[in-house]
Image 1 (cartoon, rainbow, N blue to C red):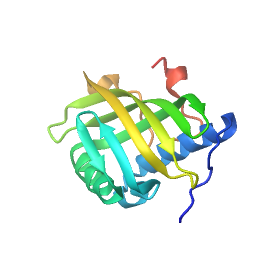
Image 2: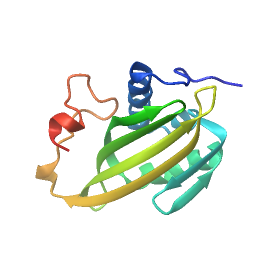
Image 3: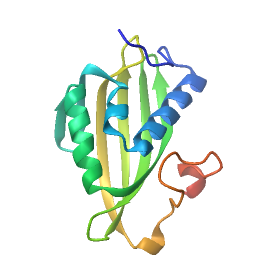
Length: 155
C-alpha cells in the first residue's frame, strides 16, 4: 500500500503541512498527480456530484480544469483531529467566455493510516467577480510562500 506523508494522527504542524500539500497539488491542475493523494476507493461529495474511486476523481478533475481556466486556489486549515482535517478554501477562475468567479468552500477530509484521503465532502458557493476584483495574481502553479493567505486577504 502506498503512503502519503504526513499520516494521521495529525498534530497542528502536520495538519497545516497536509493542507498546503493539497493546495499545491490542486494548483498544479494535473488530474493524474492530484488523484494519487486519494485512496483507490475514495468517496467524494463535491457540490451535488458524488465521485467514487481514484479513477473517477481523475476524470472529474480533467473535466473541472477544462472548464475552470486560470485556476488559482488557496486553502486554510480550519480544524483537525485524529485522522480528519477540515479546511476552508477560495479559488478564482474564469470560463471560456472570460467571466471570472471566486468560489468559496469548505471541505471535510478523512484519511486512512497511509495518509491517503478516503472521504472528501465539499460545499462550494460561486461568486461572479469582475476581472479587476481578482486577488490571486501569481503565475499559474504553486502559490508563492510570500503571497497572503485567506485570513490575510480578509476572505
